[in-house]
Length: 145
Length: 125
Image (cartoon, rainbow over all chains, first blue to last red):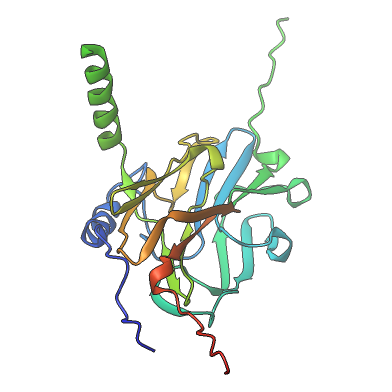
């Protein structure tokens, strides 16, 4: 074949990315960022008054294949991200993580596993877990005598 | 006129204030085209901007910064996705297809006709 092979893309911000990765370690909302660019999939945990909300960045996965289980105080997520195009052409860059993943996180408050709801949109899995009854703050009305 | 300039300036400053980071990208080539596949979780069609200016292909995906509650633990990066690529002359700028599916953007760029492999018919006499 007479065609000359040329790398058709030049990545201009490679260096900036390296830098942003470095700085990202400091940038979290609470200065809290234990796994910078490391673990897949990346998770956030929020406290939303009567429930805990977990968001997971997990693009390009069929939600039916994600295995999610919630215990009283832990959440386990496993699944596989397959690379359907693999072997189809000549790769210049392969940065997207593929393969099996498995993550367990400990929740800092007890939740009710029966009331868990999960949804998947734009590559983000969102899990809402109602806090266990005993943990919910109750206001106790004081009766005047 | 001044207003437009001001607006433009404001736009630039706003862009710079937002933290941006690179989406993880796979790039592969077949004889007909080049495909770029990017992970952009949380980016919807409405917040995605793809531009070709001269030799530069720019992809910008805006992320909503809404948080469902107080942050207890965070691994996800805050800001927008942004990445630029240079297109070589071998690629056809007019033939770029984009598809966004479950937070994954797939861009296919056709190669220019002149460099596509051709089959040459041999006519028998």
